[in-house]
Image (cartoon, rainbow, N blue to C red; front, top):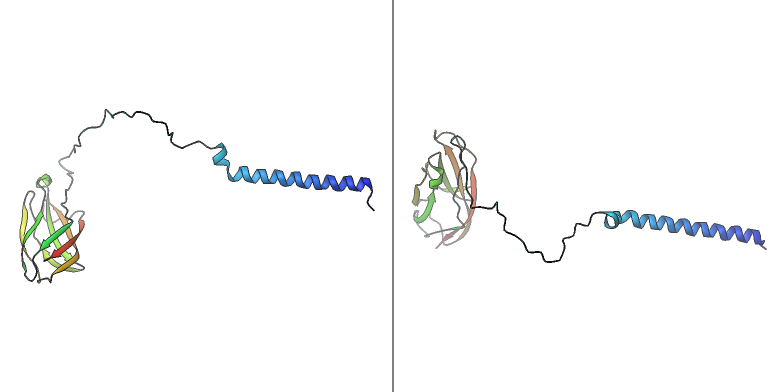
Length: 171
């Protein structure tokens, strides 16, 4: 049988194990939630605060330098053409007037890798509204692209280009 001294020693050992377990558990909980407990509170206040108009806001204006103008590329969501013909009207491939002659644009209408139409250079402010495509298309809706290649005034140097995904509706 156990003596009372051994019982006390066993009770102390059990108590020490329990206390150590509690300390480790609390340490783990605090460690895993440290940012939540001690971190900054980044939540936005839910109270209503009347907002004010920013006095520095203004209409958009663009400063262009003579030797580094921006290129403006047009965009389309959809182009609709007639079926079973190569002579197409109703398109509008254009070089926006804002390009001010610094850049010429060249257009390609493509379905997949097939080029249906390719323009020559288009001056700023000019439009192409009649084209001849390489083959007639059947009625349907096609996923197509208009590839736009800007050229500098020397008409030889291409710059960054643009790709506009469109729906080509053939009716």
